Image 1 (cartoon, one colour):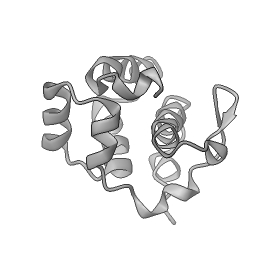
Image 2: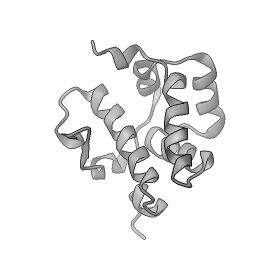
Image 3: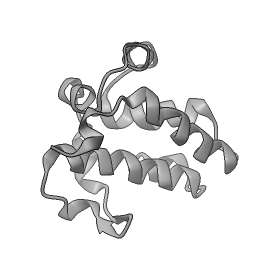
Image 4: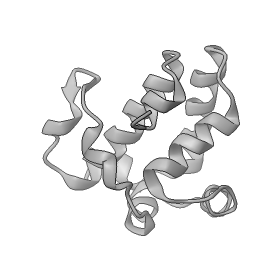
Length: 115
């Protein structure tokens, strides 16, 4: 089992937030991206953060967006679509979305909207 699986989402969330805020994005946008991927609304996300939910538990409860297969590209030199472990792939999807948000991509593109 990879160490990140047992890491709490709450311990990584501040790093995601710092990353996007440094690039002029907001907490609300980060939460929207997480919600799009996982199906968690803002109160449910806050519950997971307060409870210290691990990534394994977090994604076990998530209802992944049906458009998740549209997330492609590399994170740390690894193509997300090629990650074999299902849980690691979900974590990499999240990393990729956070990266795209921090890179200044429009929300419609980050959220894989048709428009």
